[in-house]
Image (cartoon, rainbow, N blue to C red; front, side, top):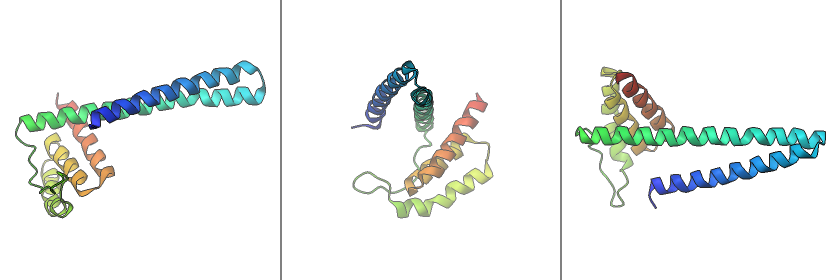
Length: 146
């Protein structure tokens, strides 16, 4: 299963969940009982939070994939990180190459290319949180460049 397929399946499941919770909220509010109405209002908020979270994650995925494709088209995607036979990056190789990407960002803090490569290096090293932060910064910089 590809990442795109997984994202679509999760989006459909979340949409189904949001619809069911929304319907249950309407049912609670319709009873007129104060406690049920309060629960219904609380449940009515959850679908909006879920939809916002879904949109944010899908938008991040779409934008980051577009930047990766653009970087690849420009010939800058090869990070020089060795891969295991499974195709996953070798963490030791990623850790060894990491200072080069951090230095590139320090030299060119306004370059979305450098930030995206740093994010990919963080991802290869297994640090997903920092990878997402770096890729988000790359997206902001690329957007400002346009």
